[in-house]
Image (cartoon, rainbow, N blue to C red; front, side, top):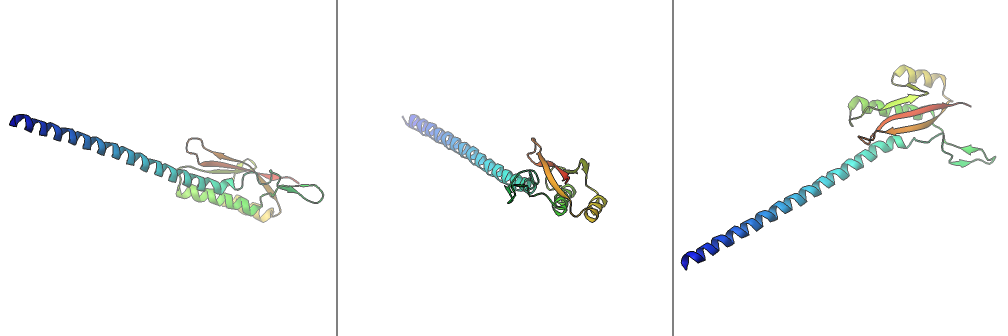
Length: 154
């Protein structure tokens, strides 16, 4: 009789141990999934914040935002200062590689990566207006990888 009660105590202890171990494994997996979701949400917020800097210019000079008194559409074109800002944001990202993407800025089909291109355009054509045709996002990284700008011909 004494051996049977000890056997029951041992069997009960083993079952409680298995239940506790199962509970700990379950809690661990739940907590790690929650932590993973939090990190994923933070990553998406950072990606959105990064992309928004460039997406703010998308459609400028193309999309009609209103009409003046004579009925002429108003498109809010980019100025040379806006173009320089976009180019500098891309150059800063490419230089520091904050995000693992290289951003190409093309103006009228050619890349404006050199200081000479910018200086010549700024000095010679201050009155030119530009339109932002496209801001491309890489489907793999979900980050902006190119911006296409075109000079508006009067």
